[in-house]
Length: 453
Image (cartoon, rainbow, N blue to C red; front, top):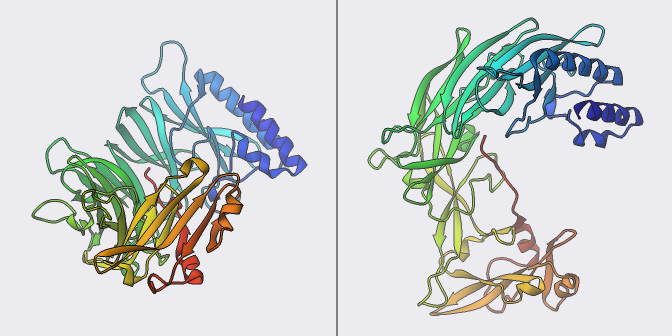
């Protein structure tokens, strides 16, 4: 199967149809991948791979998650724009089994544009969970980071320097939640933060590994919020004033989520938001969890959404609608509010709100004609004790969506091939601090921001 994919890719290259590469076994991934210039390169590489697989009694292995999931990965490790190596991920299936059944074969490109097997890395476990490439040592070359899956929720994280003639294992650490790479000390090299759940109460933690004296060493750790059920997501991103940080969002066993915010203080990893008395990041707690942290205002700093429940039009029925107050944190753990939004996650849009809307506006969903492809959110202004509707935002997906969008008083906000978003504003009800032009600027489509390893 891989041989056919390689031949198909070579044919695509010769014909100039670069789009064909996206469906083949060898795929370009950021700057690590470089497509060979000639079909012969693939042919000789395939011959070398077939020979190694035959000698090992192996088949191609599956990589479970991440950006680098191809079973054959062409690598530009030194960043010079030319791929000089290929990593091939295998599982030994020969009779009798093997105590270390997983293999990563590193092939080096020779001066004659052929490939030779330079060395093989061996791994334990049931599968390869993920693969990443980062410069951990500061020598300008990327190292390989491999998560070996040992069992359900149990992993070994290894990092290897990939030299022309051999490799060197820089770390091998058991973990059970997640990891990420980041540059918290701003030295230009990537460090590794490993997230661990511990069986002893209150000892769930983030471990900070950096390159020292030829290996990746844990130099500090900091506690995660107490009562963690699991890690939802983790990412490196800026704090206020451009300070590098790590944001780890956790589900809590008693319900709700918190986001722990980490940075370096001196040389030590610290959890800026964890309250010392409760052991929980109370300033980031939310029971409403449909919206994840994001750089909501585009300033390069990750903000955390804190929900504010809205009043219900019916005093007998609690509202299930929220405004979100977006907070960003500084290196001392101080929070400041950047903006407030209403998110319609069901319909895939959000609205950045004028300050004047707080405490005066509520929202209600109207799905009464959703079977005909129209859903709506209606915003109400409170005047005295009464609420009056002043703005409706529609999501139209029916066959008659264009006609519905053109009804009197409605104006377009966004459209694609299957959906029209439009609105109807009644300024006679309330001078709400926005008009049609401003509302268009405040309206946004929800997109994914970050994810977990």
